Image (cartoon, rainbow, N blue to C red; front, side):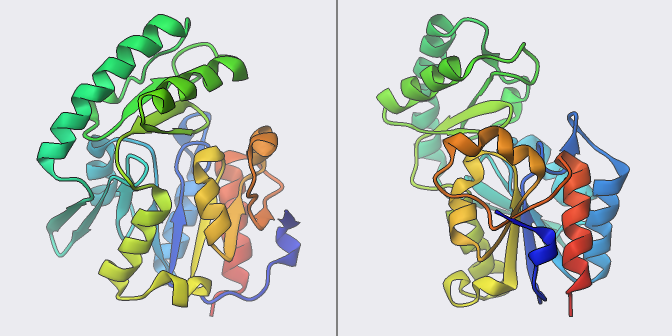
Length: 260
């Protein structure tokens, strides 16, 4: 991973960014990170949060934050609020979603039985597509072995499972953060990501961001990524010296120096 001092001149259309542990500090979006979002907005660079957080949160974010849109539940959908209208794009139809929820309920029961100390994420009631298991947000932090056990249960049932800094998110369906970002680029910017990857950047902090780190030419992480360094095959290109929201603000300041 390179330091931000090695960052070349950039000419970005859009910055995709994780939220928890990237924009937030101790679970909250602080003034530095939020000001950085406005800085990008005022510079004409679109911002699209890409998060494991639920549909209910994403509705609010799309409406009230200075963002172009928001991708939620690890790529299950994106929302865009534009010209006083909300566009909701889902990657799975309602019938399939209902069937998947029944299968996720079985996984939920097994995880709670087999992994002491974990809990269903407090925001689960706002979710449409996935199951989020809390291992450090509202419960005492679990061991890596316990986290791996949660992941193994999801995978045993044929589900995809991704680890964030607070949750294990699991779902059925062939999508992730990266597939949703590519769809967003094509649908909302009319640009093929593969042909114009240098026009886009991503900021993240945890293993569920790994597909993004691998695909984006300009991938960034805040310093707390180092907690997960041993779990990652694909590291970000650049890393901040500061952690969480302060690291995000540091990255945006570095990017802005090279914005055309």
